[in-house]
Length: 236
Image (cartoon, rainbow, N blue to C red; front, side, top):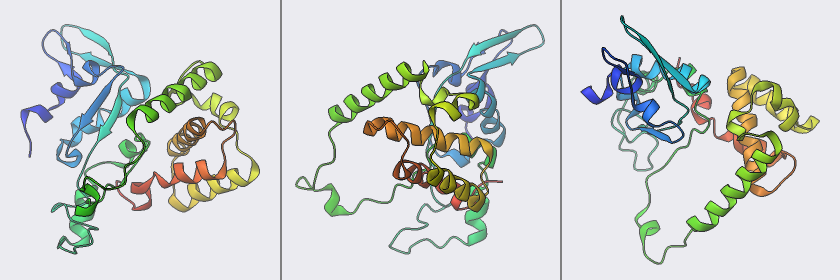
């Protein structure tokens, strides 16, 4: 499933006179990558540095240009080559090795930089009925997000996602019970320091959305729960 849209210059930028790629065009916005394992490994791996630094350097023989690239990465992928792994229908016939190879196309270091790993199961027909129970409406969610972001800017001068490690100890301080829970998860899942820091940022955000001054055990447990691909041992 390799197309011209999935090549490195399309993502990073390029040309004889360097021009910005999709990650710069998505600056201060969202970059959505569908069918993540189908992208070239090189195109995915070069996302790692911009996700950390917020900029990209495009170098050609004649000149070098630095473009902004602080974007929010959202990606989607099937659970296996056929797309049915884990479904209650049992229709998946992919072997464990085939599933591992498919998921392993996305490296561990890239997964480290994705805060939320969320499984989205197939909706049952009754859930799509007009009389099905409705969730929280978009306007309410938007109001909570705006309020939480305002709290973050007032507290640290930046969104939680941009907090450097030095500020995590200040703004994401944990009590002893929560610290034990985090350390146990890091050891059990063999998480990197980067993953641990991202768990703290997500937990701090969950607390902010709830209007809580402190990160509670429920916030931390939910943030750890979003590391699904770490629990599955995906990526190498």
